Image (cartoon, rainbow, N blue to C red; front, side, top):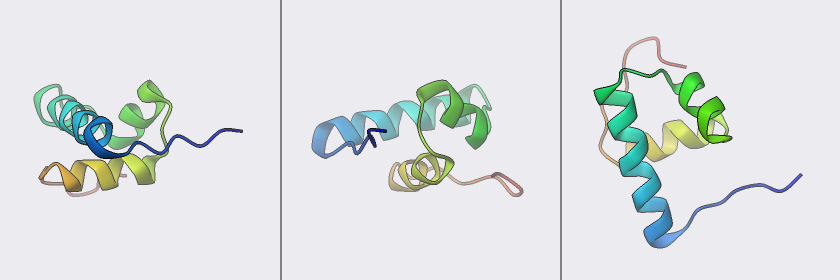
Length: 59
């Protein structure tokens, strides 16, 4: 299994996109992870890097 590890501009763009979906569309971390084929841990990390406020109880 190949692990996706975005870096640099790709990482920043993905983080911004995830934040938009998380805050704008109110998608949960597990939904974002499944939609984009990422781990929940990576989604959470990218959201934090993008400055998103993680919702209470978000997985």
